[in-house]
Length: 87
Image 1 (cartoon, helix red, strand yellow):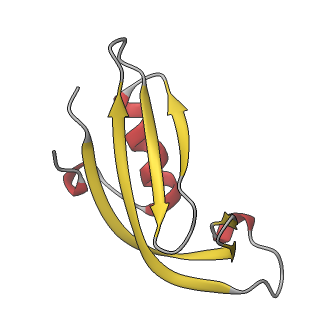
Image 2 (image 1 turned 180 degrees about the vertical axis):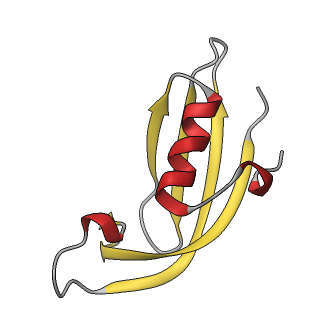
């Protein structure tokens, strides 16, 4: 599988090494609106990593059994749709 890329903007809460999105934010916590770079990287067995890289923050990833599951997670977290991805 080729790596897929997408980019969006989102509000990121916390610190560069301990960040979260608004659904996990604490009351009064500081935030930054920043560019989020996303990648979906596949392996030979069809499993995927959704790599989330907010500008100025550490990169995070999540593991998914399928490409569809990784794309659904990106849509749930950040509103990224199938049309937003490119190779």
